[in-house]
Image (cartoon, rainbow, N blue to C red; front, side, top):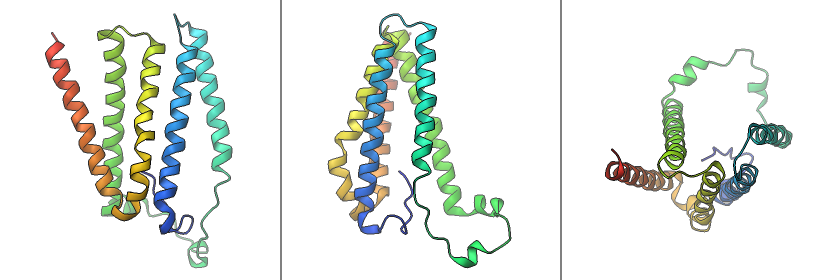
Length: 187
């Protein structure tokens, strides 16, 4: 979930904004993984991976040009004219920020581990080629797209915590299912 400044996106439009943001992210990821799968179809060689890497670099540069177009929220004069530096240590120790930071670190580790496990499992245990793994990964973004009609209107009423809690519970169910499946078919 993205933090949204109330000066840029009014609270009454926040759910609609976040739903559109999630739609663009999931649709873009779906299409990108399909392009990567097409590029790595068959027996991929080093050149195909290099082309994908170059494509990623170009798309990253293009995305930076869009990020620069995002309007800044107006900063009050007293904050703009103050001279003290950013109190990084105080910011890290601030309980809500510390909680958010720990959650993001945990999510990154778990998501990275889940992705690595999935790719390794599909390659080694299921014997799938890179292109097929990427097609399967692209399909996973359809899940995110399919839930937007349901979540967008509820985010404004319920807030993000119940949605995140439900998503976490579903993710844990997937992990338990994967662990059970690996235990059943493992050595």
